Structure formats: C-alpha cells, structure tokens
Image 1 (cartoon, rainbow, N blue to C red):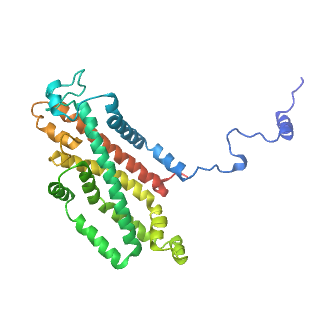
Image 2 (image 1 turned 90 degrees about the vertical axis):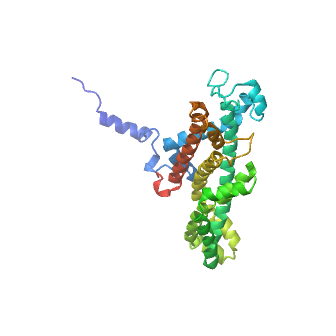
Image 3 (image 1 turned 120 degrees about the horizontal axis):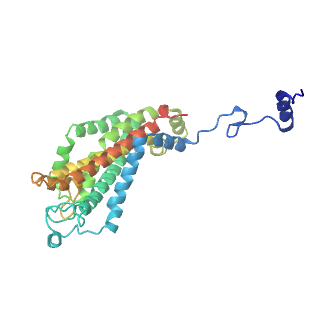
Amino acid sequence: MALGPDPMILEELVEEEVGPVEVAGAPAGGEATSGGGLTVQLLRVFVENKLAVVGAVIILLMILLCFLGPVFYHTNQTNSQLALMNSSQNSPPSAAYPLGTDGTGFDMLGRIMYGGQTSLEVGFAAAGIATVVGVLWGAISGYFGGWVDAVMMRIVDVLLSIPLLFLLIVLAVIFQASLTLLILIIGMTAWLVPARLVRGETLVLRVRDFVQAVRVMGGGGRRIVLRHIVPNTIGTIIVNATFQVADAILLLAALGFIGLGVPAPQTDWGSMLSNGVSYAVAGYWWEIYPVGVAIVLVVVALNFVGDALRDAFEVRLQRR
C-alpha cells in the first residue's frame, strides 16, 4: 500500500519556501504593542466604567433638553398673565401639557427646560470661578510656603468654619438676587476645597527635580506656578471641578427652595420645588417629582463622571 508524503516533511518544505507562518494580528517577534498615549489610556479607563458612560450621556441629554428643547417645544415662561389666560392652573399631564401646568399656569415641561438653563448655567459658571480661584490660591500658597502659606491657609480655615449655606443665605439677603450675583456668590464661596487640594499637591511638586531645575535656570515663581505646577495638578483639578458643578447645582436648589433663588419670572429647579411643595398636599405630584428627578439625575450623573475621572487620572489604576 502506497503511503503519502510525511506531513512533517511537507511543513519543513513550506517553511523553507515562504518562511515561518505568522498568526494574523499577532505582534511580530514577540514585541509588545503600544497601549496608546495618555489621552487614549484615560479614555479607555473612563469608558470601562459603565456608570460613568451613562452619567455622561445623561448630562449631555439634559443639556440638549434644556438648551435645544425650547427651540422645538415652544412655551410661554415669562408672562404669568398670559399663562393664566391661555391655560388652567394645576392641570394634570395631558396631550397638550405632557407634564401638566403649575399654579401659575406655566407648562411644567417648558418650565423644567427654562429652570434647567438657569441651574446648569449657575452650576458650570460657579464651578469655573471656584476652580480658577481655588487653584491659584492653593498653588501660590503651597509654592511660596512660610508666612505666605500660613496667612493664606488661615483665611481658608476661617471661611471653612462658617457654614456654607448660612453664608450663602446672608449674602443672598444682603444683595439683591440675580443670576450673575448667584453665580458670583456660589463661586466665591466654593473655592475653599480646591484651594486645599491644590495646595497639598503643590507641596509635593515644589521639591521635584523639574521645579528645582527651572528655579536654577532663573525661572520666576509666576512661571513655575503657571507653567509647571498647575499643569501637573490637572487631574485633581478636573475631578474636583466635576464635583463642584454638582455642589453648585445643589446649593442653588437649596437657595431656590427657601425663596432666595433667581427673581421671577426667571426660575430654577430649586424654586420650582419650593413652589410645588405648597401643592403637594393636594396631590399635584407633577409639580414636584419631574423637577426632583431632574436634579437627582444631573447630580448623580456628575458624581459618576467625577468618580470615573478620578480613577482615570490615578496612574496606579490604569491598565497598562
């Protein structure tokens, strides 16, 4: 019986003709593939956190709802007399009013969009002010040290000892409430936490070799702080800024709930809750639950995103 060629001999002949067979997609020579740059790694860690992705989607949808929604869903949110003439008070959800109307006759869905614009604007603007002031204060204090650090941080300690909500109430009562004033009040009272965080990072960074090298080469304190120390604390800054937005929205909601929010006919989510509480006993749930859910969703989503950013910027938690 004739036997076919030996398979081992055939394999050796093929390798001699075309070289060793490589598996598709495998790195040649056993070399490790690159995991991408720092941005790619940060994005990968962020995307792996499913709650953070959901939170980012919720924030994006809420921004689109509040700022683009009124373009397609036209409602009157500024003239209370016109609202009373064209609609009924405290109407339940219907085809004409998907979320009903409030005690003034305003459409609740449009009101949530209108109030959401104020809440989100105050949240992001106040967080921006608090972050800028806190970062500069903490970086300057930590870099120069000595009596400068002692004086600056004692000021922070004194302000931190005052209850924040109480301070906001006093300032809101003294000055006439407006959107710009609320942004300034919340922003200028929320910078204390980022100041302490950045100061702690600066105390570590100021003794690093690259900072000492810049100082030896004649670099001034301003250049070292702005060009070398602050950029190296960007992870802490971004993560804290995310939480600052959530805190600012909650603070505005608290002020609005006690009647110190933006003046009518403007509104915010806290003021809407305050107005809806008076009708809660009558069973008008649509004046409380939708706006309450909006506040909870945005704040929780921002916290999810902040947690994911903290993990992404923590080098020890990155997959390499």
